[in-house]
Length: 63
Image (cartoon, rainbow, N blue to C red):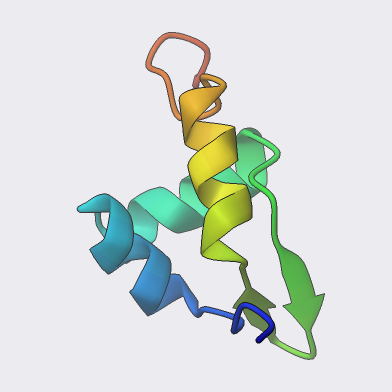
């Protein structure tokens, strides 16, 4: 069975962060996601791999 697509809400809950944080990562951290119309969709396995590789690490995010 194929992995289902997840929403911003799902990813925020999965990682224990706010939706605003997810949107910031999309804008500045090259978070793995796909745009479907106006919505962002994710594969949680890709997000997990990105986090483990340091994609969500503090330090490189500047306003």
